[in-house]
Image (cartoon, rainbow, N blue to C red; front, side, top):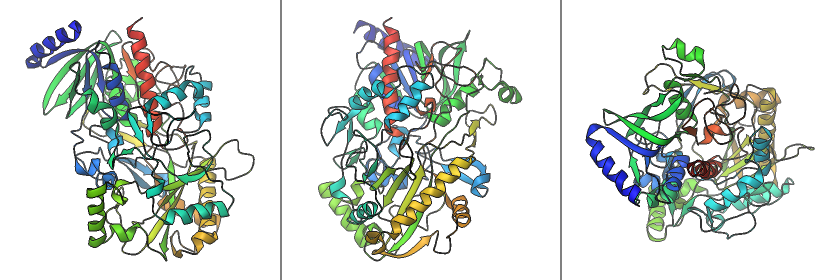
Length: 557
């Protein structure tokens, strides 16, 4: 405690000089950063500074689960990135919302909680990353969880992150969807995070008591009471301070003022798959040709910084329904009023949920060792929404719903790079979506599964009309044209600071330390060796828990 008290005196004395010193400096208060900050400050032995470019998460549309639709196009909480035009997507630019707020993207996501398949992590280990196999990461998944379904050999309780089974509150149309899945031979699975991922069922979400359970709520808010943790909002990191290839601190801009903070032990980048590689490149760490072309001094040539970009691409099929859907409850003032009253009084109903209520993980052809397609069912439609928006509170005026499919492990690889030395300029993002024949084949297979589902008796009975792609799209070529015209990201970018043993191909080693530098780690989804099979928030928090342990282990050596 004496060390903490002394550090507090130093902080107070240095604040007026715009220089502060801490044991650890973490950049980014997203899913990973909140977790790492909470764990590194937990024992009181170390001082921690957490820098977040955005502001507070104390906003109605963040705390109310379905309010994330209001955050998708809100620059006060969202970086609102755009990709370069995509050749395979008819030259369209992708819209990539990323959280710019305490909690990061966990404050604006759809809250679906999916760990991934056990074999995903076996792949990580087999790529030269000891300590990252399934048996290694399962204890961390259990550690983070407070699962409403209770503990068992695969699930945890008592952890910071509450995971809710909301099957009893899902829209009644989900039952028709699940019956249709069984009618085409798909098996039921009541827990995609249990002993197997195969099958169809209801998605679990990160919610508790009717409020979103972001990483900020789960990890950061309790930790902010500690005197050894300092959280600075509206503080955008502009450069990693490097001396003799050692990270010594961070330069950042807060409310128009340039500041420096020094790190006695480590700088940890947890800014996500876009901002972590961007910050490394701005600091002179990255592909030499890119940096020199922009007049940036090359401190360390690291060719993989910003490379190996992976993401999930999804196709939606939209239907007009013969029976009521969430469009009725959310698409009229009367329905919204009733939903609002129910939420205010009981914290129940559609405002307390995600719209991704049903889905699953399936194998679309014989001989596959593991599921290769993820399915979604949403009991509402929003055909009028603009690019990047999710008009969840303004759905279509008629009853409608969505069926969706995405390949679990796409093989396309993209990249990102800074456009200039200006830290406030968005980087150039080139996803290269659907650039391999395998990805195109799996997207087409996913589309055909959606058609089979729509034709199953339980769904066929409630479908009045297929709106997209429409009945005229029948041949493989016509379905591929529809995919190119409408498929889009589901916001899971990873691997731009990939973990692996070869510094020429990867950015960090299996301890998440940046190759060629000391005092610097990257702990976020950018280090994933390969994308996981499903939504990426849960594995990001797992990785952050393990990354914090790695940092603490070094501190006591």
